[in-house]
Length: 518
Image 1 (cartoon, rainbow, N blue to C red):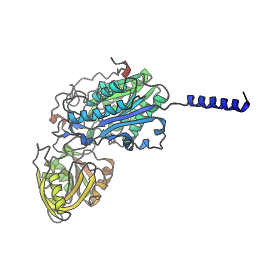
Image 2 (tube, one colour; image 1 turned 180 degrees about the horizontal axis):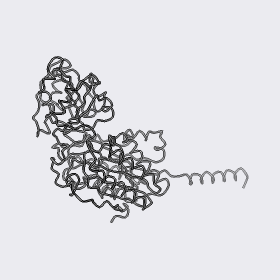
Image 3 (cartoon, one colour; image 1 turned 60 degrees about the vertical axis):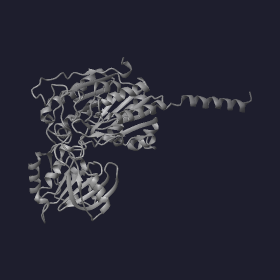
Image 4 (cartoon, helix red, strand yellow; image 1 turned 120 degrees about the horizontal axis):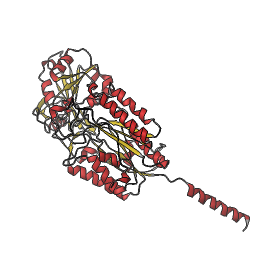
């Protein structure tokens, strides 16, 4: 063979060898549904509330998955369907089955996979179905197979049933409440997944699951204050142990009545001793401080809270209308608090106190406001179309001072001025979390005496803006008086319902790997 031909032949062999030794990228699907659903609210959640994203549009949910990011380049990604809803009432069975059906179809059409990122909240309730997330992941397994590595990311107010734990290979949740680390937590779940596929270690050898019989609301378990702050500070200490992949504490979701509603600790990894001891340490620490949890802010009945706010000169004095908090699953349209507020003369006299109320759904008033425009007078009922158990629809009469279209949740927002009070009325319910939510409506929150928001604990931006703050004990589907709600299906004994219960069994239960299930 002539030398040039020989060199060409050898070069071709070299290129072929390089191609054969190129590392094949893992193929990873993305799927998930997320919502908190109060079973104590009469509201129902329909499919459109999830604003489902499909295909490449899903990447917009994850800043760490930008096209040029290193994480994006470490795998071949197959985004299917991810839907996230504002907290609300129980999801209709039709909505659930429709979203699940679309997800499973897309997964089946794009098989096979090495891994799957399962992005959920963990507190979804569905009509006629217990443990929807456990049902969903089981049905996903039936399509993609048990060999696929699934990494589950959750809110710390989600619920981890044994079934969800079994079908999740890797699992984690937020470590902060308010959830300032939501993006970081999802990134951790994805990085753990990609790393385990890259290094060939695959499924962790051990998953320790500890059910902790505690059911407390998020407003009592914030990580801003003790004991939640120190309790969650122990999580990374456990995670950093040799042979541990991840550690997590779930507070659980208090406003649904299912057997899975309670706290849980999980630790995953390859060292049995470190995994089990870490899980038991976190569970015991949680149990030991159970009686120390208190509301993250001063909490008063409505009348007392309002008197304190009226007497204060701190602006803005924030009042949380907690019982109907739409960010916890309330219907968001209970009119009780607004009705009581508008009875007060302080908001109707010259030089009286100024008030912003955010917000109340009132599609009929919004329709009237669009007819008369800014500066026009409107009179129409607002609220209580869904939850009228505590007060009737409120006839609101006043001047339209702002109209804004295009909000992803509210769709249309209208501000109605009633003497010294500015009432934000929305076509659909919306929580108000940012200063811009107010300033975009030509309101001046920093100069307002009292701002009432339908949320529980204040998110960071409102917290930093507050002059002072009280959380009001008001009625609604997410009433903070849990015992008054009347849970019937949770597993008893449960703290704080059974305050004198004996110390529970907090030993680690080692959960089967998904490919070992019968």
